[in-house]
Image (cartoon, rainbow, N blue to C red; front, side, top):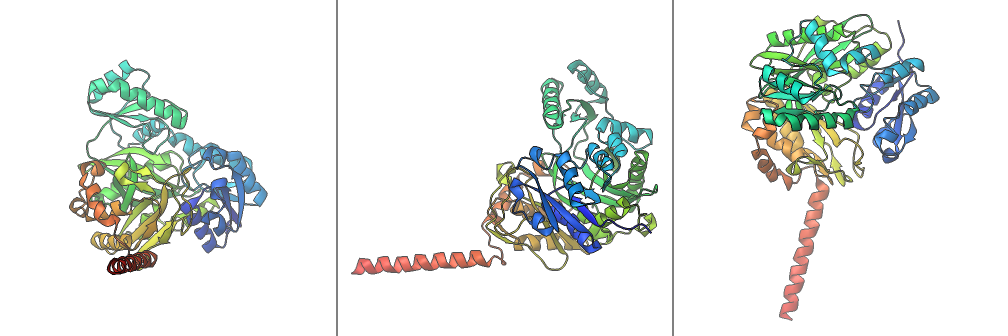
Length: 490
C-alpha cells in the first residue's frame, strides 16, 4: 500500500492553512507554513511544525511568488504542497512547477486546470458532453458583435470575463444602450484582475439559485460527487452564507446534478477535490464553471456526509484510491456556514481591517469554528476580509437555523466591524426560514440592514470583559454623580 507524505507545505494563510494543518496532524504528517511580513505573528505560522518567510505583505510579493513557495518546500524537505484556495490555487503553473521540482501537488493536474480555467473552454467542454449550459457566445471582440449576440440571445444578458472568478468584471445588461459601457467596464476589470480582457455573453436568468456540487476523484479514474451546496446568499457575486442540502433540491435533482458534475469532471481528466457550479431555476439547472480547488464552504459538505474532504485530498494526491464508493455517500441532517468577514454591511460591506480586541468563539453541540485569528491578533488590510467560518449542524434545517442563531449570539468579536449582526438578521428573515432564496436575496431584502441594528449593541452572554467594563463605567459614573451632588450641598 502506498504511504502518505511525511511533510506537507501549505501555500496559504489564515483559516484554510490551519484547516489543512489539522488534517495533517491527525494523519501524522509534519507541516510547513509560509508567511509574509504581515503574518509574522499569525496563528497559522505558530500552528505549523515549522515556518518559512516568503516576502513582504502584498500578495504579489509573497503568497503569489511561486518560485519562493517551491523553494521553501524543497528547502524544508516537504514532499507535497497544498495550495488552499485563492492565491495560486487555480493556476496551472503551480502543479507544473511542483512536477518539475519533484513535489506532489494536492489538487487537480495542470491539464485539467487548463481545460477548466477558462470559462469559455469549460462551457464548450460541458456542452460537448451533454451537460446543460445557458445560451451564450464565444469571445466577444467588439460592440457590434455584442449587440447582435444580445439581441439574438434576448435581453437581459450578463457579460462575464473568460478568466478569473469571484464575480469580478461581471455586468448584467438589461437594455441595449447599456451594452457599450458594460462591455468596456467588464473588459477593463478583467484585464486589471486577470491579465486577460476576453469577455463573453450569457443569457441572464432572473433570480436563480446558485447551487454547486462537490466532486472528488483519484488518480485511478474514479470521480464521485458528495451532493450539493446552496450558495445563493451573496454580496457582489461573492458568497457569505452557504448550506447543505439545498432546501430546493430533491433527491432526484441531486442525482441528475451529481451525474452532470461527474461527467464534466471526467471530461476534463479531473482528480482531487473540486466544485462544479450551476445556476438553478424552476427545476432546471445550467452549468456555470468548475472551481478547480478546495472551496471555502467545503465544511458544510463534510458535516452532512461525514467525509473529511481534506484528508481525502491528501490520500488521493499520494496515489491512494478513494476510500469510498458513490453508493457509500449518504446525507444526514443540515449544515449552515456563515462567513464572518471584517466588513461593515451598512457601508456596502466595506472591508474594516483592525486589531481584534476581544474574541471568544462559540461552542456547544453542533458548532464548528474555522479561523486563523484570535484575541489581540491583527486583521491585515492586504488580504481577504474573512476572519472566521462559523459552521453549525442540526438534525434538520430548522434546528440548524436555531443553532446558528444561538452561536452567533455567543460569538465575541470586538474591534473590526463584522458581518455577525447581518447574519443574525438573515437567519431571522421569514423568507430565509422558508427557503425562498435567490442570488438577489440581499438586494431584495434591504430591511436586513435595519434589522441588524438591534444586534449591534447587544453584549454576548460570553463577553465577560465587556460586562465588567460596563459595570466599572457605571460605577465610576455613580461615584462621580455622588461627589458632584455632595459638592453642591457643601
